[in-house]
Length: 130
Image (cartoon, rainbow, N blue to C red; front, side, top):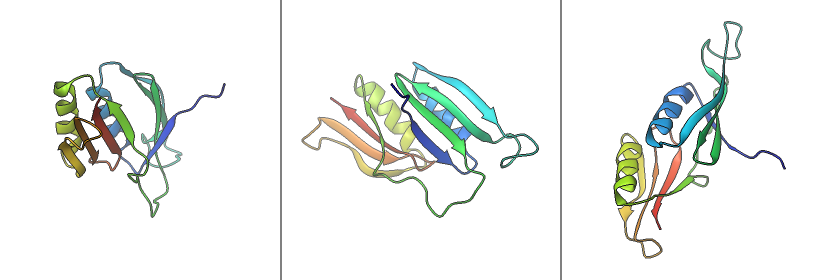
């Protein structure tokens, strides 16, 4: 079986995003991290790649040394089935801060409480209360 993970490419703020995500979930950790040296690629100290684990899901985060004309899109998102309303509200409050609400926290019929948002880094999250 091959390893499968979601890759999140940032332009200089991978570490800040990783720090935020790891602070939100108790069962999370940095699995490995490689930083750029003085010779590159990219700015010294930037994230060449880092693997983090949130629950059983692995994310690879990196700072692209190249500026791109694209970024994250809501067509790919991280879906979190929250344990309870308190957890969902906590995640919503932190991830929405400085971000963009696509579907504010509400009852949409298919879920009693659901929200879809882009966080301050542009990563799209769906927060569901099953």
